[in-house]
Image 1 (cartoon, helix red, strand yellow):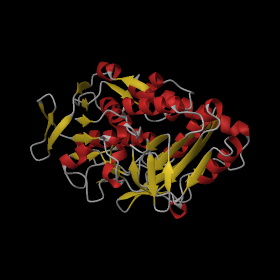
Image 2: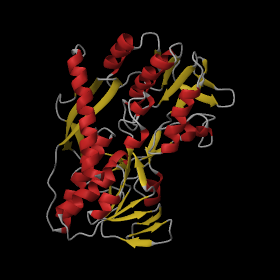
Image 3: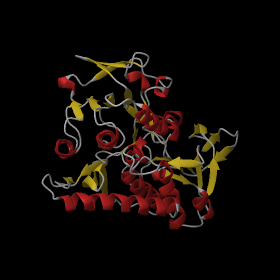
Length: 390
C-alpha cells in the first residue's frame, strides 16, 4: 500500500505495478485532483494556466492500481494496517508513505493556518492557496510591496522561493511596474544564488531586493491585520505577503512513528525503509535521504528505487544499491531558465554527493543556453507527468 499520490507516491505505484503485476498495489490519496508544485510559479508569472498543473488519478486506476480517495487517519505498524477517513481499515504487507511536507506555522509569531488565509504560503499541493496568492497579486495596487518569507533548510525545493520571486517580478514588470519585491530570508545564502542575482540585475533591475539574516532578513513575526512583518532589525509594510514557513515531514509521518526529533524520516538508502519502523518505507520530501534534495525530480526517482527494492524483497532477493541523479530547473523569465544537477551514492547509510558532481548552469551562459534550459524544464514536466498520471 502507498499513501500519498504526489510525484513520489504515484511514481512508486506505477513502478511497483510494472515490476511485478502479481503484487496488489493500492494508492491512497486525499484529493481526487493533484496540483503539481513544479512549474507552478509560472502561473504567477502568467506564463501557464493553473489547469496545466492539475492531474487526476483515472489513468493510474486504469493501469490496475486500486485508488482510494481518502485521508489516512491512523497507521498501526505492528498490526500492519492503515485506517482511512472513510472508516475503512486496510491491511498491508509493505507500506510506503509519501506524505510530503507539513508547515511549521508556529515558527513565525502571528502566523497560523488561519493567517495563511490572508498571507498565503502556496507551498503545498493546495490549489486554493495558490489561487489566493495569484488573486492577491492581481488585486494589488501598482506601487505595492510583495514580501516573500523564505525558510531555512531543509525545505521543499530549495530554489523555489527565488524562482517565485522571479516569476512575480515578471508579472509586476509588465502589469505593475512601480511595485517591488522584498525577500526576507532565514538563510545567508541560497541555491544558485549568483545565477539568480545576475538574472535579477539584468531582467528586473530595482524590482527584487534580497535580505539575508545578517542584513535584517530573518522574519520573526507577522501581523496580518496591519500587514507588517517584523525582522530582527526592521519592520516591513507589505501589500501582499507570501509566507513560506519552515517545514517537516507530513503529519502522517508522526502518526506512523517514522519521524525522528528532526521532524524528518530517516531511511535506509537501499530500500527507503524507515529506520524507525520495519516494513514501512518513506519516500519523497518527507524522507531524510542524506544529501538528496527535496524535489519532485528526486521524489519520482526515489519512488522507482523503492518500488524496485520492494519487488526484490517480495521475491526473496537482496536489493542492490542505486546511484541517484537530481536535476532542478528554475524559470526566471520567458525563455530563460537555470538549472542545477547532481549525482548521489549511498555511503555509510545515507546518500552522499558523488565527488564534484553538483553543477549549476554556467554564470556566463548565452541566451540560447537559458532558452534551452527553459525548453528542457517544460519537456521534463510534460514527460514525468505523462509517465505518472497520463
